[in-house]
Length: 550
Image 1: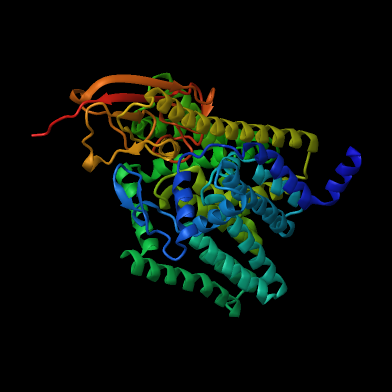
Image 2: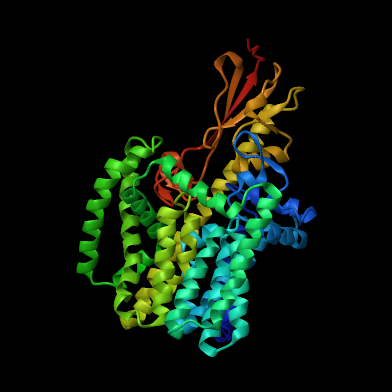
């Protein structure tokens, strides 16, 4: 029976890949919401009832009540998608994560279809996408990134097929998907130059096919006009200004930002490092590693580590060693594109090089922060490039190759499980804090955001509003240590302090400043994930006395 099923799967690769995604991500559907998930959930809940005015509500995300349009740096497309997912599957962790799982299936199947044109082993390319840390971790969130990637990949699929076969319907469909991608995440606008460049190389001249790209241009212009009319600000332009201001405020040099981006690329696509022995000669790898270690070590010690004040003692050197390793992996990934420099008469080579290089440049210099989510769009391109490179090397030692891919897959799964455990620890810290507060007559206030905020509000706590916070004696204030926009109250306002500690993931984390892990933002760490000692999720509970201000 099993052999028959195995034979059937071998003859039906799309079903096999769909089943594989379900097997890997299905057990993670109950992951607690964390990081930016609440923003997308609140948006989905709002557009469910007010679809015509998507950002017309207020949130407390920085300690102040602010309109949603001023807080979010993403368009509303994912909100509509998760509103549909919530209505179909339920407004809970499993229901909303099912929405992301479907988008993940679309990414893997889209990569398979595209790789069928660009390389000889599309199943391998699709599996390499699935088994990268950046994809698995992103596919276990309720954010816009995997949905964007699904729209991104399928727009390229229809664009490539439409131009190759003269099918105008597919070209127009690609334009529609680009428009939806832009409305899902602003980085979708990068598809416009990417598809235009590919079309010009493939067709050798401009043609009517370019008109399909006017669809997303018109949609973006309409979005600019609509958001200005509704909220007084053209939000696509505002997001670009926010990115520039954020880069300037953190103060990284261009070189340091590029090296951190390399670290996120190398760690986020770690399977490329595991395949390195089958892609390059040993001497090439050795000299590349030596050069990376020298540059990364010097720049890291002088200009990167000093930015991370929570990274102290031995943890600094542990993080630096990982920084060099993942930078090395990032250099190898970019090397895949450099190797194509002699094949740029091939339109497919142009597509892959521009896809990879454009995403890297945006990650390092364009986004408001360097994070795994900005690396994510390059994953299908890298997977296809890896397979093409293996094909040029003769696909030597296939058993060893499988072991390398399995090792990379194991690391991706471990990283994802640790991210899952981190979210569980955050939710538990909120639950245990509320249990410690008890059912007293006073109000329970909290600071902090992300998943902690979501669960504290679900349990009835109220967020602190800094410009209007004057609690009476006996109220309680709950403050998570590892969070943002938090501060301890004045010592004169404290009657009593209690501490709640919840163990986080053991030995590896995606998100802790003291470990150097900053998957969701390089402001917190120079690594996409970090191996080492992971501090507990600590929460302080203060009993307050009213302070009279003169």
